Length: 91
Image 1 (cartoon, rainbow, N blue to C red):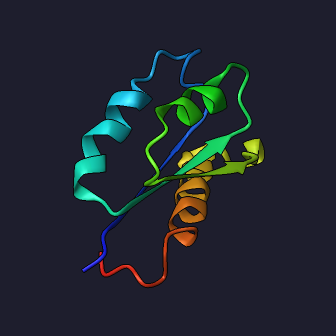
Image 2 (image 1 turned 60 degrees about the vertical axis):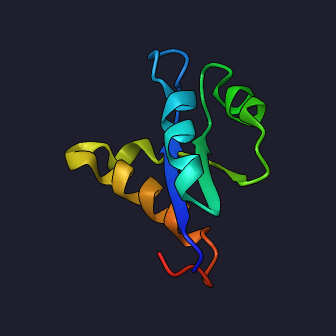
């Protein structure tokens, strides 16, 4: 059985979001973790790259800020991360 995890992040440092801890908490459960990193105003991409386990795959994204109403942009970023998971994953 193969388990894939996924998440998205943007401006983690600027907003003091514990992305290292969030990714670290799911790593033991997953065979791969896809992290969609949006173009940020800080060093979020470098922070995620520094986490380093081979199980992490980073995709770089650009958020469409015209979709902010109702959290639609968050759904779009979720879909991007999910679409990048291994299609052979069972979960």
